[in-house]
Amino acid sequence: MALPARSQNISKEQRVQSVINEYGDTVIQMSLSDAKTILKSLLEKEINDSLLDVYTVVDSLNKNKITLLVDKIEILQNEKNNLTEIVNNLNSIIDNLKSENEILSDVIKKQKKELRKQKIIKMIALIGDVALPVATLLVGISIK
Image: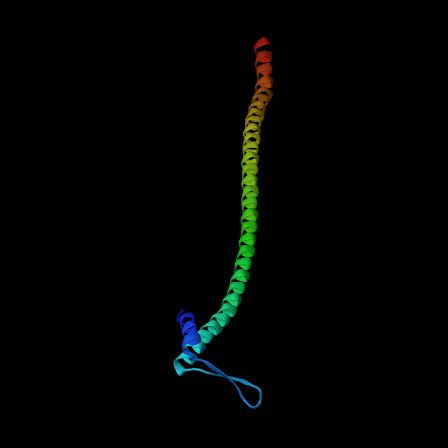
């Protein structure tokens, strides 16, 4: 910020001189402190310009990194959705197996009842087959 103030002083104090040499080049003469101030200002602008390039590259890399992370998040969300669907399917399979087990249990109970019933009928038939001829013989003997 000191440079504009000096430029006003330059025009008043004739601190800068321009001379054209024999080759037609313009040579500017000034004090060493003024030259240092101008060079310092130019160097700061040059550094800022080069930093801008670095920051642009870094920003571009960060954008690419963010894009990759967003893609990875989408992939992970799809995986989560797929896993949730698999869990739901497995839960429905478990429910189906439970209902099939209940049906099988009912069938087994019914078959056990039927087997008991058949055993009772066989026992009655066996007793009837033995008792009827014996009773007939006893009745036949007692009648004679």
